[in-house]
Every structure is written in structure tokens, then in C-alpha cells.
Length: 83
Image 1 (cartoon, rainbow, N blue to C red):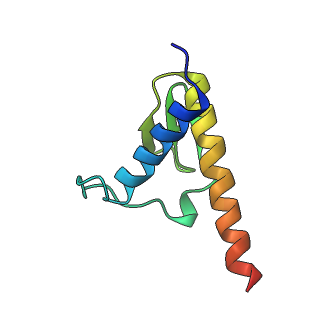
Image 2: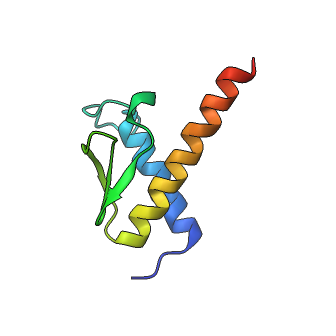
């Protein structure tokens, strides 16, 4: 299965919205700073303590999602300390 950058971005946005309850599910808790950095376990994205947070469908996609989530979390942490 081939994923374009746009499709990966849309999946990532949908994942984040679902985590925040915006997508209507509202059952999952948002990720906390203590969950980072996230990593991968085959096709899954997992928190530091090994709790699965997403099934990306493929290992390359899981790695890309984990990398993007970690970059976003690092950027938010930097912004928090910038003020």
C-alpha cells in the first residue's frame, strides 16, 4: 500500500482529533506530555509505557506517525518554555 504525504497527514490529523474527542468518539484521553516520546511496535504507535495509541496499518506509516507526534510534542514543549 502506498501512502502519499497528504494521506499520511490526513490520517495523523484524524488520529489526533480522535484522541482529543473532536471526532465524536470522546472515549479516548488526549496524550499527555509523560506519554512522549512515542515509539513503534510493528504497525502500532505506543507510549513510553508500551500502551498502544494507534494502529497505523504498516510499519513505515507507524514510524512516520510516531516521528511526527514526537516532533510536535517537542515543538510544544519548546514553545511552553519560550515564554
